[in-house]
Structure formats: structure tokens, C-alpha cells
Length: 400
Ligand code: CTP
Image 1 (cartoon, helix red, strand yellow):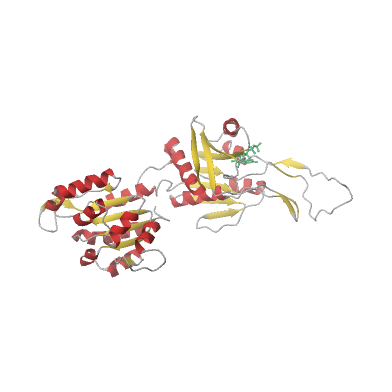
Image 2 (cartoon, rainbow, N blue to C red):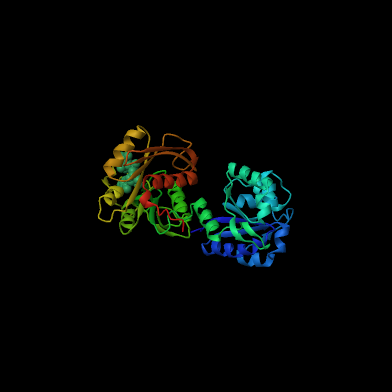
């Protein structure tokens, strides 16, 4: 569920710190990389050794213990996908709300630009203190996610509000924020790259597709829990299944044997192949012209969309050099797919070999969503978001 995600846990000086040992295990069970930062006071309640063993990472406390060129708090902030401060003491909450950076944990939160979950735990009188409450209101307003605390019997002997909320609540919110499970249990097949149509043993016809968009989609689907098969025309090593193909015919064969929930045809498939492949190298002759005969390749996307094994969700791509909207709409209905992602190849700063793209996603329900220029990794995430929005049934939607 959390494969490929890094969760940074901040533990402060509260007796509830011992509960975080189990939270670390919950994240680890779902394959997250867990990093832990403790305030010096936290170590009065849990040991560094225990945290290190459970998280399988070094545990950081000191701010100026710099292992690489970056200050520790910046390295930590950059390396994680989410920060979870639990238990969060009144002291740390108040410092964060006021931008105070006097230890590694508070400095890291200050430099952290992604989601931060704060799970307070403290004595009920401290919780009710208007200063603490005011600081919490401020944090909520600024987008920090505050979970709990709950009412109950407190370690200090009091009965009231101040208990760390249920660990499952913290875990579920982490998964929800990371979008880590959206594609759990879904089999997704993605094609990438330009097909190669051989002419003879040394020559071929192909196109400029780099396969970066398809690869970004496959990485994104995998990070969201999908069972991914990438059918690619280039060599790439990944933890998920990669099937290497060369020609359109090979790609067709590889696609048709898959039983998927979703097929994304990001590959640039050659429409024609050479009619008579020459087993030996074609030699130069005295003639000034030679003619290469081509025959039509099967349209893989169209074939899949009209087959009995049609995946529930089929996404096509189209690269156009003119009349983008018109051509995309025509292709969407001609091929009978659910979504068509269109981009303009006349632009040199996006598309083919660029790391960036700018696309419009047309759906068969009539919607058109334009995604502004962004890295292909970001565009991949947004494409999946659009699919969830339009096709909610496709998304599992259950936190865990
Ligand atoms: N496609 C396919 N099989 C083909 C050609 C294209 O599966 N033989 C898929 C592509 O992977 C893409 C979509 O169809 O998802 C649109 O490809 P594109 O090349 O834009 O469209 P074509 O149908 O080939 O039409 P044209 O080349 O005339 O624009």
C-alpha cells in the first residue's frame, strides 16, 4: 500500500511515544520507508535502538549531525513524502505554530512542504489551555492535519481529553494523503516507446517517441499499489513486470494476452510495417530510387476496445501536429476508448523526448481536462486523478 513512499515520523516528549513503535510497524508492513526524528525529550520515553530496529533506519535527534552536504533538517524534509508528528506535545505544537526552529524536528517541519499530520497527546489541562488551542486553530488554518486527541484515562492519572488518537486513524489518514492505495488490486497494462519496424538486419522505420510518458505512468501506477505490466520497446529495469517488444505486431501479441483492469496505450505504434523484410542487408544499386512497400499494422487500441476481454478502462494517447481537439475527439470515438490523452507535437518544449508534457484529456463522457505544462511524472499523477474523478468505479476508494 505504501510501496515507494517515505514516511517521516516526528516523536516528541510524551508518554504516548511508546505507541509509535507499533505505528512504525504498521507503515513497514505496507512497505513504506520509515524515517524517525526524535526531540531530545522523546528519548526519555523510547530508545533510539528500538526505533532504529523497527524503522530499519538511523534515528536522528541532533540538528548538526550532518552526514552529507545538506543540513540534516533539509535532507529529511526533502526525502519524505509525508511527515507524521505523533505524539505531538503541547510544547512542539506551539513551537511549530509560531515558526520556532530550535531542534531537528521543529526545523524539519518548518522546511517541509508536503502534508503534515499532527497527532497531539498531553494532559487534559494542557490540552484545554487557550494558548495551545489557539496554536492548533492556527495550524489547522494553515493546512496541517490535526488528528485527535481522544477522551479517556490518561497516563498522568487524569480522565479527560488528551489521549493519542487510535493508531489506525493516523495510519488511514497517512494512506489517504499519500493516495497510496488507489490502485491496489488493479492490474494495469501500459505500453511505452516507439515501435521499430525492421527493413533489413541493419535498418528500420521508427519514430521519436522516448517512452518517458509511458514509463512515468507505469511508475506512478506501481507507486499507487497497482499490479503493473509495462510493455516497452526499450530496455528498462523496474520492480514491476516489464515485457520488451520491438514491432507493432509483437506489441499487439503482448497486449492481447493480458487480462487487465486498465490498458494505457502510451506507445507510438507504427501504422505501417515493411511488406517484405529482407533477410540480408539491402545492397546499394545503380538506381537512383528504390521503393519500400508498406502494409498496414493492426490498430492495437481499436482491437482491444472491441474485443471480448476489453479492460474496464482503456486510455489512448494521440500526438497531433495540427487540429488537436478535433482529431482527438474523432479518435476517441473511432477507437472506442474511455479516455484519450492528446498532446501537440509541434511544440518543441513538450512531448516526445522532453521530460515535460502538456496534455488535454478527453473522456467518452464528454469532459475535457487540460493539464498545464509539467514534468511527465506530474502529468502521470494527474492523468490517474482525472481517471478517478471521471470513472469512480475504477478506483477502489477504500483507505485500507
Ligand atoms: N495505436 C495503436 N495501434 C496502431 C496505431 C496507434 O494501438 N497501429 C494507438 C496508440 O498507441 C495511441 C492511439 O492509438 O494510443 C492513437 O495513436 P495515433 O498514432 O495518434 O493515431 P492513429 O490511429 O495511428 O492515427 P494517425 O497516425 O493517422 O494520427
